Amino acid sequence: MVHPALEPYIRAVQANPGPHPRTPSMDARRAEYLELAQAIRGTDEPVVATRNGAAKLEDGRTLPTRLYLPENDEDKALVLYFHGGSFVLGDLDTHDGLCRRLSADTGMRFLAVEYRLAPEHTFPAAINDAVDMFRHVVTNWSDYAAPDAEMLVMGDSAGASLVAVAAALTRNENLGIAAQVLIYPTLGPEMVTESAHKYGVGYMLDLEHLRDDYSRYLGDFADHTDPRVTPLMFEDLTGAPPAILLVAECDPLRDEGLAYAGLLEHFGVRVQILEAKGMVHGFLRMGGLVPEALEIVDDLAEHMHHFVDRAST
Image: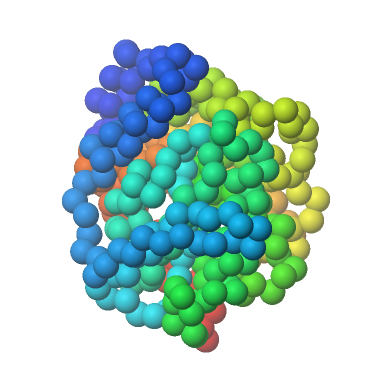
């Protein structure tokens, strides 16, 4: 059941479905996504500073970054963060409010990454960006965090998919990742679960639109069984970092998120599952509309802190 505070917005979405994603230009979609993000973010949490930068990767690529330093920086952890947006939308600004809130709540530094988007850069460009950023941060640790700080990797939606894949691909590289934090991840273009059937239309994330964005993301790559496309197809996740997996009750992606938690556990990976009752996909950024969403942000921050504290002992 949808949270009462969300019901008016769900009714509005169901009464006025948006245009097909191919109708507006990609520039128009991105501008609208940013405008919506700014409208729903709520009040910013205090942050000592944000530092815009650029990560120079080994092959000459440069990715924009934003480092968040909270007022209560405990020097315990750096969180490497990848935003959502169906692999085609989003940037440092669309998820700025969430990064500020989580950085303040955890007392951890956040390093947000603006990875390459489709359709300009198709699969596996974003995967390569995530993997290379994992390695870049470890190699250049002193640029971002205290020497003894722990590293967490985190993403929401499409960003969570990138994090899950990159964490799996680098699991034997001794990167020292204390935890992977996966927020309502999308885990492949098929989307045939019970929650997909129940909530796939009219609950903030339209699966027809997401499938279309997957087609832009994958381009000519047609193998949906490749675990880089569908992480549920990984045949071995032994040694992957411990995970926090947050799902929303009324999200079409809920069941595949829970399935991925089960897959990680099958290979001996420690997993904490958080389910946000009554919430929909993308709710963590809706603090301006639904104050209750901020309480769940606080709960997530507490669980992240537990992983850091355990890694430090």
